[in-house]
Length: 215
Image 1 (cartoon, rainbow, N blue to C red):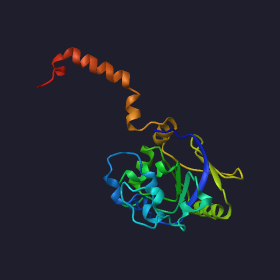
Image 2 (image 1 turned 90 degrees about the horizontal axis):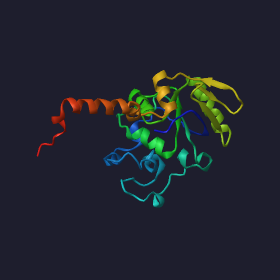
Image 3 (image 1 turned 120 degrees about the horizontal axis):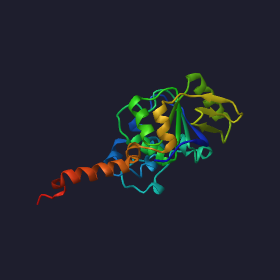
Image 4 (image 1 turned 180 degrees about the vertical axis):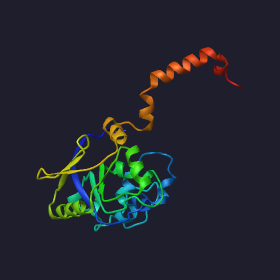
């Protein structure tokens, strides 16, 4: 998992409340057994004018010019600004996969759905909860200035605005530790690889029949 320490990026505004996971990545794309390739189908029903299906060539699809991520001023955005209850709906882990694979590193909103919030941390995506008034001010600034960027300093737990002012945010210590070090659940386990190998060797020495294959 990619580590997250300090990130500076262009901000894209998703000015809708209660954006659910089916909007983030529609259900037809959940058929894939891979954990990659979901970025082109992020917000598929809003992003394109034609119906999306797995395996389509995205370069020939018709883009919706009114959708925020299709506007040239937000090309390359890596921070998503959203409204309350972002990520509600079903618990699909594909939603943070799609956001990450599109290029987003962080999402700022007044609130998130619990399961989506947890899935973000497990996949290297930082969800930041800020007061609704602070989020509304950020929407005003993003809409008012082309190329609006923010710097997110996770070790210091602050969002730094262009004028140098800072907005503090809370993050649970263990989740912060995992993100800063790039540890997903497997990475956390592999920290103890030497101990695991030693245990397995000792166990087989005591019970060698465990290594025998049943034909």
